[in-house]
Image (cartoon, rainbow, N blue to C red; front, side, top):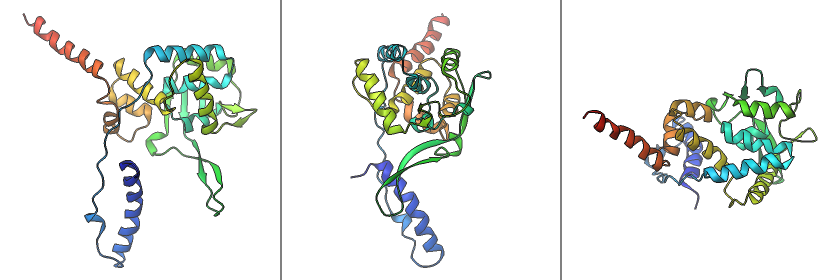
Length: 243
């Protein structure tokens, strides 16, 4: 009942064990005969431009400094774990740059009690550690709440874990009269808006911290029918120019 993506992730780890056993001549080669399910691309859900405007308006009027986190994600494409781990030391407002080098998530503790704990670690891949330019309007907003150190999104100086911040995000959607979609839709929205504005896929892939351009294309290459229409019209304009 697991998704194809989950099955492949589990198998990739299991395969390491199976290969080690094979190399030690403990088992026959069985992993090459296993057929994995095909991954079916899901429709990428994003905010419409009108919804994004309403959400930004709610954030402007909220009076809650932590709500700037949603704006940061909308205009940089970082993940919620990366946002919650972001510290002021990672932001250089003079250079208008943000360094992403940590993420935060909750896992089941390995002590056998089934309790969970918060873990800070490096992002999911080497390419996920990255420097991201910050738009001028966002620089000015960050200056208004800037601290010398500590977490950008915080509760009396302490970190805010992703599950807690998602609850705040859900409340912002309610205030903006927007049907709920997952927090990750903010990252998708950033990517789609970037492509709509003509940002090249290589640059977008680096901003998102994807392992390759093909990953970016697999996610978003099929999600912009209107953008594709505009590109076709540009190509079609060559016909009139040749007359």
